[in-house]
Image (cartoon, rainbow, N blue to C red; front, side, top):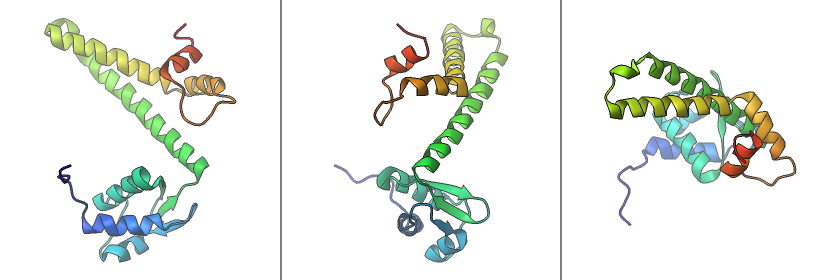
Length: 164
């Protein structure tokens, strides 16, 4: 296998090493992260975003932001709250994108663009609807007594009354 094109920066490696030793519910301040790399670190530092993503994907550790303080390693309940916040952002983003698509005059589009516009509007509408609290509660009821993981798509659609 060839070496990846992307190489982790020294800052990302140092920040990742600092993050992964943080205990569950522990807080690592921006000052400690800054000391680890010898320069100021804020929540928008690219190397910190990369280090958080690596900790999540490789070490199964999720860090939430405590504004102006630093990062907190989330426990399992916190991870679900974090994901719930992200789902809200996805729903809102899909809603906004759907409104943007609706601005285009579909009758003036070429056939391929018209198909794309209709497909985008349809998919974005589904995302908006499925990411609503009502849908999450409905699917949640179908998982009572279930194991970890997610429902297969057919079971999810069936729980929402969208499939037989």
